Length: 330
Image 1 (cartoon, rainbow, N blue to C red):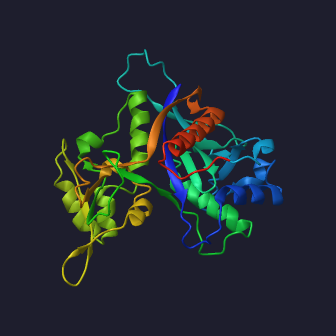
Image 2: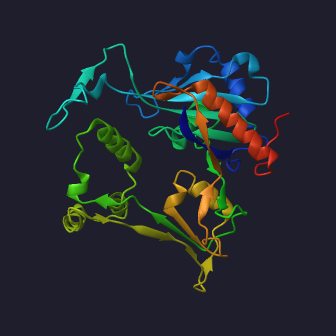
Image 3: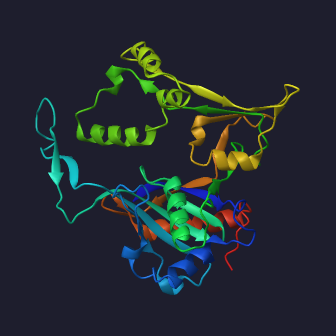
């Protein structure tokens, strides 16, 4: 068994059409296009770099007429090399050697997997370390555009639902603070040598890529020289942190509230622990995404797709019964 976090998402209807329902539209497209029974036909190269994203395992077709559709999204990376330590971890050695292994021309290396379930426009997901909710949005957009259901410029956006840390409805906020991932000094950034540390290091790098303080400063048009100069000032055993305030000002110099809908969309792919809100006291207990942790069966190091999808559906049902989401299963 392994722990996994199930997140709630909901289709953003604005920019599409009022009557849209994601679940029946997705089922209709897969059946009508003949993509239901052949995963090969569901392969998409989203980045045009031979790293393929596939709607792989899906709920049995005979169950598609029910209220739920669920599936597993996998991302296969380009290349045939995988990296591993071949020595025994019981061996006394100054360092473990990380070797490249060729898995063969016919094999594709799994970058990661994501699991999801859809009921109407309500979605539950379990993200992988490198396959996030944004990948699901891009895949569904590309699939539905390919089927002619969406026009160019239309997109599938799956908003989160944020609530105050005390469980109450989230109020509008006058200010949002976003924390970037800290950049650490060279001593802390040195790559570890133990296998478990190597794995954790690679996971952390994948999570933080594009989200660090220096990454944000590049977006803000800081020059490479200025960033390098700042980097040199960080001690080997230290780090640099950055907090970025977002607010709306009116001519009267009064801050205008940021709506709950905007928060749910704009912050949907950001970890709630990296957020702070100011306004109406809601910052006292912080904010959290509507989510729940569950034990999921595993097949070696991967989640069991069938159990992952089942647990997602259970979470959606529980949120519906508790009145946290307006979702019907009939």
